[in-house]
Image 1 (cartoon, rainbow, N blue to C red):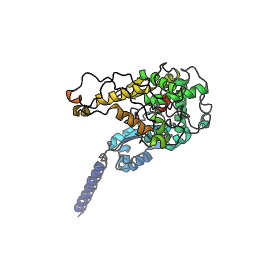
Image 2: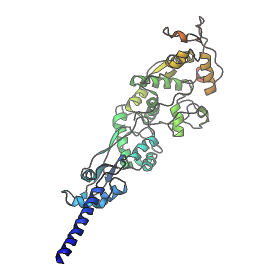
Image 3: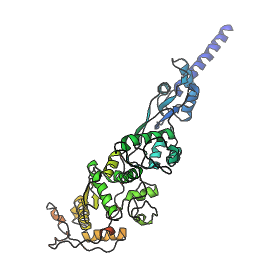
Image 4: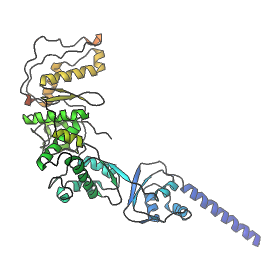
Length: 413
């Protein structure tokens, strides 16, 4: 009888051990499906038990209790030190356990040209700093007086002064600490190299630089575009920069035709002459330097080419600008070329009048058509005129760009 009882106990123990081992094996499998990685941050020491419970809650591991059993037989601290820890749903549980003993430095890249709310989205994606906290503090410049010597705004927004760079996010880094680091970077990389300018000069250069940042595709063109902006501002022309309207909307997308004039904001450079009230984003040091030292020329217009580096073609007169636009449309639209269809200059002028509600403009002479054209494309080309192009109307009535673009330039991600 005792032998049978002992055998029964052994069978129960074996079964319990089997199911226990099987449970451990099942719970140590990675979570499926895998998810995006994120950082956990602890500002002070935390127990391993609470840290593992957080991983289970956020679907990184299946069972925190099972992993605690494993941790008891592995060498290592039972505490998680202050720091940032990178984890992701789907990582092997034993790897997650090791990750909690290996703090890493989280880095945040703040993009050139982005305005405060757009960069705040990147801040929020780290899950280490609250996005709304960052926006709230960045719009209260009075809270940061004395952080730097540079003449930052006394009240209101810090737009344009939060330098776009890569920043480490330590255990103690919150929204305030990040903004302070950005202001110190602005002082070091912009204000001091510019020669410690006054508040008024700095504000103007940062404002122009923020537009240059979004318009220029190549470094060599930054001072040229800054020169166009200054030329237009000097003679009272509208700047007609799409990004200023998008800033007023706080949306980054292609503008609809009606929005050029329906968006009522002092930042809308289609409605208001001169510079906008302030920066429309975070310019790089190169763009602010270009704003300080704009190229001396007499260009008033430019059009973006379809090439990958987004270079521009510049023009002094509206007639010359229309020729450039017409030329680019015809040499780059292969489908129209093959079909022998070309939108002539008259159609282009009509589009400009429709989009920007301009007065009627005089017809211009057709541009010189490149010699290398498919034979099928000859039909429909406007004839060359031996007469000189008629004088353009007063320049202040014309936009810098004709018609809606394909959309504003997006900063590289």
